[in-house]
Image 1 (cartoon, rainbow, N blue to C red):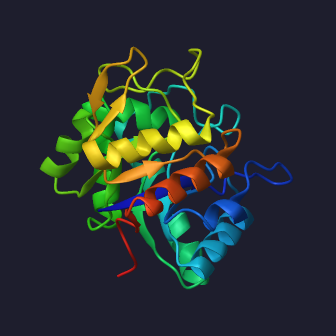
Image 2: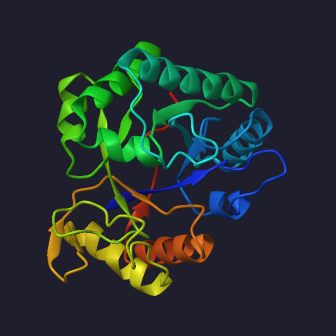
Image 3: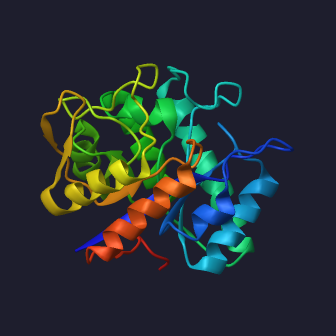
Length: 254
């Protein structure tokens, strides 16, 4: 068995810091690097890419709505042309900086409100897909496991990579519990690790009502901005490796 472990990184901005990227990069196999629209500036992007390259960690463009003040978590409704341009712009910026440090952007993962919106909104999803195809159709798109986006992306010629969340609670439908709800974010490293081991072995996670939800995932995300993110990521990695699961990125440099 093998699994990818990813985290949202490079989410600093100027003197403002978010998370412990250096430690997380020693744990994960893939890094979703903020591209400046919800967090991240050019210097932070370059430093994160360099640190990932030094460790052999795969990097992806963590694209977002233009929402620095709301950290990309506020719903937006741009028209198709604007959204396509914004996504292409972010991927291109990260690609240029990646070349400067001798690495390569090998996938795309939307962030926050955009990620959640395109899981069910086919119009916005198609604009994102067009942007990726226009930049590089070989770039995989990370999607919420079980969402319509998985099949939509595949139908339009992209590789879709279904993703599960280690530190988030699930609804019985397979949707994530909204962040505003109590218990939406999980903080117990041991509990999270056992949940992810069950996911890898059985393809299910326990929903908040106790039912078993089928989640077929190729990658597991630990949010870098969550409290105790390093401890959670370490616990998940160690539990999987101890159980014979190989950690490896789903996409590598070509």
